[in-house]
Image (cartoon, rainbow, N blue to C red; front, side, top):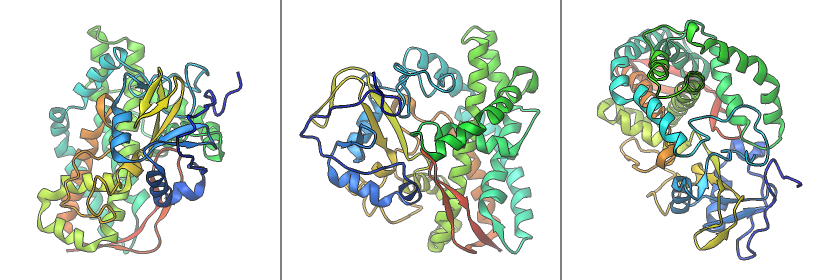
Length: 407
């Protein structure tokens, strides 16, 4: 069988609209808004011939498809490759790329380790680290928002929370970028990621081994679940590695995107400073507005339908979460960034049983950073052009020159 990007070619129903576009081109990855609008305008379900996939970008269809784990599964890969037909480059994630009942078992362990109760016990450490970092940055006339803050904070606090004895900030950040680029097509981004995968992946595996963790961190909680027979010790090691994309990469992206949003909308920073109860809603709005995870795929595990169109078994469905989060049919004035919007139901953390397991800790980390900045920083000003970093699944900044003006 001849495969297209690791999945079976699709002969779509002729009534499905066609969108002749490459959603993985650098042009679109750097500025996805025009593509997202075209995807929504084309119809509730479209066919993208470049990769022989179906795609959804309107809110209702995206949420329904992404949440329907019985018809549209994750176990056949959240990227273009169909794991039923082609062996993945690494063992599938036992949290992202599995379905019930296996998913139920591992999700229970991860949810317990990253519960709101556990995150609350970490908040004092998070806030103390944010105080030190922000004070240091306020001494500078200009900062690089990505490296100096968005990357520096999670790579300081999260390895400590996990209990990692070995810390390599660059590998921690790059690991997520490699994993998420790997879900895309065989483009330059994926090939460069695969070149670095052995080095970075090998370090991550060694650093997350039980003997390289303290006995009082999140990692120890996962290994204790293995001791209790809830999961195997091999599964425990894989779940500890999953922490790093849940607690580092997505959080780095979220913090960087928040800094960008607030520097571009100084009036909203003033609103936030005046009412710090809006910090959590602000983060939700950042997630809706910038969609750190812009695209994940599902695979039809049997003949199904979307919006009345037939979807054959084996079809790959591209869920454009970024397009759904800007759908004017769902959100009033979606192009406006408002810290008081409270965008309940946004798709940035996914939906259904596969909602991001690390969302509690991501919220906790950003709350610590923004609460400290709201007390100490009068203004967040751009100090140059923001540069976005193309990635096959993540919408993240590469550079963000800023000036932090102290109170």
